Image (cartoon, rainbow, N blue to C red):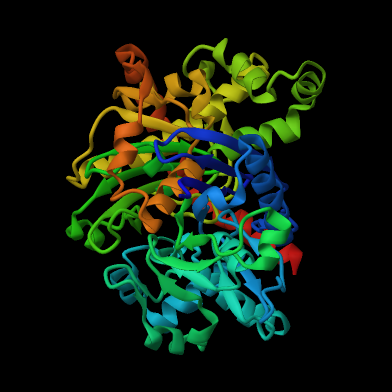
Length: 520
């Protein structure tokens, strides 16, 4: 009997895969980083064929590393970072670069859709803000700006939907990910509103077939089996958004469970079953996502800072040539070298503050025009100060949203669990613990989203009765208590951080107008 399960996850900066057994043991793990392209300010793209190439590489690797026979895989699930969009023709071939969650090209389309549909209608239907640039906004951008490409589009897919289509030949969209199409997706009913699509002149047929995360949607085709090494006929289930996948892997299955991923974006989420929160009238709405465990009545309230771990990747790629050289020569992580320099700087970075808005910002300020600011730089500051100030800036951005979540009345369980990405840095965990002023702990193992996908596959094909196995398998370590003196100091810096943004908020829009004028 087949009892092994395969999970595959696509982030903004790379992809991961793992195979587990029916006791939750991770038997093999693979990772591939891939490039992000920024051809114009505010644009962020991938080569979609890269997704398929790394899928084949990773699947072959984990099968080889486990010496697992293809027919031993009982089920497969895929997740991806969202919003993301892959436009394909009727043959499933990409017709344009893939857009990822940092893309902010569709500024004018946001305003047009607000006028055509109405912002209150959109927020009532979706329980999310249109500023998050969901897929229907980006699809509308193609319709208005690239009609020759739009006319070739058969389906508008997510990254995970694109991979499922390559594996199975089916075009599907799970209700966990569908919320990131926005505008017309009803978060409560799990359907698209055709009247809203009609108002935007978007054909409903361009959208994939909806399914629930645990639905078996199709099986591996002979062609996909040939290039991946998988067994033809292996079931593939509906999938989920990557943050849900990571939190399932971290044991977040009960209302109040709170976890943090520091991947490309910094993503903080609280599981809840409070339908009233979806109608939040305060204008400080987080991202609301149907949660994988029960998408009609369970949700995750998600705070997102657009460039979380990406801030360190930017520093590494742009200013970390020396660290990269050491990594190549001595096989020491360049990220570890960066955080070691940050560790030697006192909390507060000796008066250096960073607004980490390298590609605009999502919750809670929802400002696509915002950009990074370094405040207080002096001749005294060196590289370590800059590195630490960026790490502290990401912590302030996350705390800004956490303080909103605290005011919602949602149950929030402590400790905050650090899950994927940059949270492996003990320096960054200490910074966030002291900024938040609450106990924290780190998930042991930290296989992350692909583990959550493997668990999802197990539920979908009946290996597991439900998601409770995720909680039973989790172990937490490196518990931290906040340093109260550091927390109080950080709150002074946080208030200044907020004031700096308020003071320059209008200037971001002025800068954007100048850039646009000279690009046209």
